[in-house]
Amino acid sequence: MKNIYFLAKKELKIYFYSPIAYSVAFMFLLIAGYFFYSDVLYFSLISLQARSGFMGLDITDWVIRPLLGNMSVVLLLILPLLTMRLFAEERRQGSLELLLTYPLRDIELVLGKFFGCLAVYVLMLAFTLPYPIILYLLGRTDISPFFTGYLGIFLMGSAFIALGLFISSLTESQIVAAVITFGLSLLFWIINWATHFVGPPLSKILEAISIITHFEDFMKGIIDTAHIIFYLSFISLSLFLTLRVLESRRIRG
Amino acid sequence: MIEVSHISKRFGHRLVLENVSFYVEKGEILGFLGPNGAGKTTTMRILTGFLPPNSGTVRIGGYDIQKEPLKVKRLLGYLPEHNPLYTEMTVRDYLFFVAETKGVERSKRKTQVNETIERCGLREVASRLIGHLSKGYRQRIGMAQALIGDPEVLILDEPTIGLDPKQILEIRQLIKELAGKKTIILSTHILPEVSMTCTRALIINKGRVVAEDALDNLTYTRGVSISVRANPQTLLSTLNSIDGVKSVAIEDEKEGIVRASIETGQEVRAKIAYNIIQNGWELFEMTPLRASLEESFVRLVTEEEGQ
Ligand SMILES: Nc1ncnc2c1ncn2[C@@H]1O[C@H](COP(=O)(O)OP(=O)(O)O)[C@@H](O)[C@H]1O
Ligand SMILES: [Mg+2]
Image (cartoon, rainbow over all chains, first blue to last red; front, side):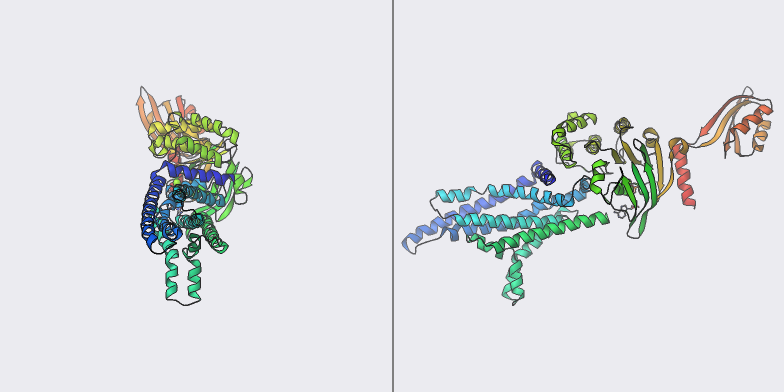
């Protein structure tokens, strides 16, 4: 346990000593801020018009959902940039060899890296917390979908990170790791589109493994354990595969 | 302290190590010598548990590296060939991280890191980013990282490669200071390095151990040089008639004193001296001609190739 903490701390330090974490976080916050601003503006415009006409415009539908949806797309684009270096860079530099001669277990290494990267991600998300606070101050009280939405975004991002960690363990090239992670994340994202033209049971399966289908309920303010279990299994499987790669690298040298 | 018995390693179909066995006593510095591609790095990677051998066993401090890797790893300090470091970290942060992961107790971490920084001459650069430092400093950081945790065994893979002469001296000095306190295996393809730092050498070529001995024995006697007052021609014929003398060369002759170097197969110094005295010549000087480690090395490696 202690070793996981030490390793995660090291990852965090490297992220913040180098410009990676800053640039990724900066771009994320810039784009998320832009979305928030435009969504809120749009909402206030519409609700002004709605005064005269139809009633009951929902802030969840008009601000929270679009914002969370947009944030998740941005994450899809930028999280691979955060995960690409995790194992690839250690392998390229040869520092993995040294690390493997320290009295550490492989599982500690994998979890240390995972949590180190996760910590950067959580920090990044924390900087978007002013948005729900602003909404609250604007007088719209029902912001609970924001909180379930954050749980969803957190879980989805963690799944991308675990996948990215796994891909990073397969190559020495950070670029290759980023490209493949991005490609696979996107595939897991859009795979449910195919449900329109394939029949069951395949469509059910595609639906079940699509990262985005599991995210939708969170945006609506619903917490369904099935979705939580999906993300946790996705993460565990990725981490398990990373562990296996690490073990097999050891055998092949 | 280190017992390597009958290890073999193949990469695909290539046999890179073949039945390698050796041991290192506690406190010894073993020079691990061999041309490039001989299998030094592979052997060291097996010793550190990074690569498993295809067959054979490695025991360090009594523990089998395959069965109790964590116990062995606690005894080890390793400096890999290319000295990989986290260039984005500062020296102190990096060494602190090493202390943490090597399991140095919390209360001792700070003092140990500071001591190691002092010992490796890193004080002036302790708070700088590793990526901004010269190769010489980086090598010292590599040594520092190996020394953290106060391991009993140090495995140093070509610790002076790519350094300038002054930096080489610094690293050698550091290794010499550790003599007797730690058990060290040091690989190199630079021969003088072994004579300067090691007590015993192991020569490896194409994955096989071709010689393992104390340095004195590896630098064998290849002949003698003598100064005698005698007639050069009779001296020459007398010496040539002695059993075991391969060749004789007259180096010079001054005021009746002849200096000759004699190449011998076996130990025939006594016979040579006896013959000279028998002839009533005055023997002024007789010194053994020792082959340098280079010559032994070349001889062993080429003999191997001739087979
Ligand atoms: N991971 C590997 N895969 C395939 N061949 C390797 C690998 N590592 C080393 N070799 C080969 O094994 C031989 C010994 O290499 P090495 O142990 O690095 O030699 P040295 O350190 O003595 O120069 C070389 O011919 C090298 O090409
Ligand atoms: Mg080597």
